[in-house]
Image (cartoon, rainbow over all chains, first blue to last red; front, top):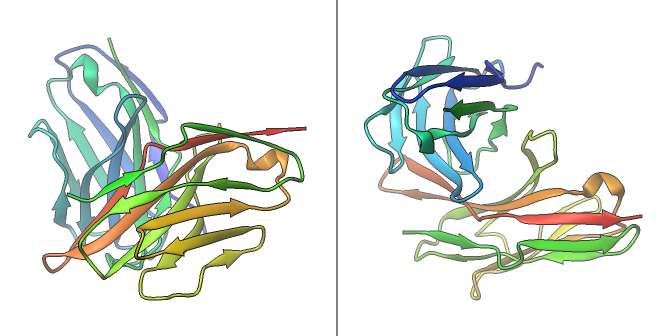
Length: 114
Length: 117
């Protein structure tokens, strides 16, 4: 099976712009989670989707949003980019959204905001 | 709020030796899972091992094993016969069920492991 894929792998944007990141989960997986990784804050949970519904959300401003499609692919959007949004954004998929499920991570999208 | 603490920002070990990475967590829940993830320089996070809180037996995966002390809320990772490929950032993670289906995965800050030849 193919692993979790994320596109694009690298992205450079300027302040005030918006960006959309894409994640394709492992085939058959219905849960997708997003994380932001920065040197200062470490890994922080953004949100989790299951069957096209957001089931869980982290403590991020409303500029961060996401959605999941019927084929389980997910996108996250960041509007009005700030310098502090520069980070590695990781997507993880799991079979279901159960506490025991293992999350499989993608390679990440490196976002740089200038 | 649940927190995960990894008190060792960096560790080093000689090839073929054994190293233990520490992790403590704070929770009032009884139903949860603990994970160790590895993130090599290529950046792809890989699951190393997981432990169910209700199981007293420590999980083992080949050269990787954990020492799970539920009362002490401690979850350390032991790597035996360290190999150069073990060099990576290691993250301890906690996942619980709270408020119905509200599963949250919380990570520690990570421990950077260097393996010396």
